[in-house]
Image 1 (tube, rainbow, N blue to C red):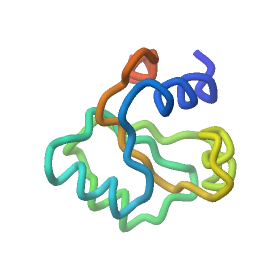
Image 2: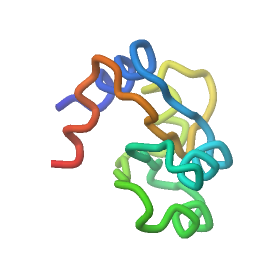
Image 3: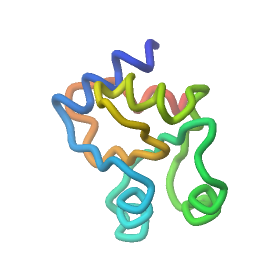
Length: 93
């Protein structure tokens, strides 16, 4: 699976929360189905999320994860609320 294409598709067709604080809030509210973390995501974010939701640690640094999502800024964490028409949930297999 091409993670870049899957991210772009889920952003266009699904519901995504971008940013570490918003991701933590989505996890606390049990809204997140999947959390994607950049390889350089701050450890406090990783600890806060813990084992509450399936997590995929991407091999990309935050600036590259932002580019993969089509954004002009760094993204250290994002939560998938609704995968839409994407196959992003396949990263769990």
